[in-house]
Image (cartoon, rainbow, N blue to C red; front, top):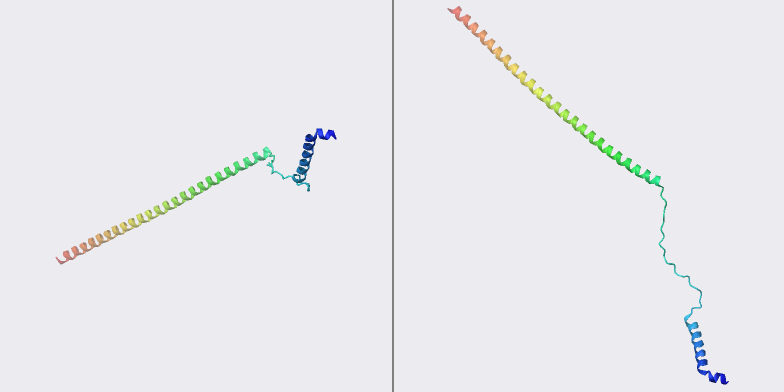
Length: 139
């Protein structure tokens, strides 16, 4: 026993340390079933391999659609211009027909006036000739 007496302080410290270690294990360690570790959301990248021919086909399709739209716009402009030209031509034709009709009416009126003047002049001439005959016959 002299060994324990000589080394009493280290022995007590060793026992105390072991008791503290056991208390620490009992109260701080969770002996229940192990929990699943929380999953940290990962940044998942959904990568898709794109075929270069598909890209070019899409570009070609877009280009053709753009050209088709441009052609339609041009065709529409051309059609509108033709319609406008036709409308103007019809309006011009109608105006010319009205002018011609008015000219003919004026010419017809002028001709009638001339005919009436000539008829009056002939009637005057005839009347004067008859008056002259009567006067000669009376003398």
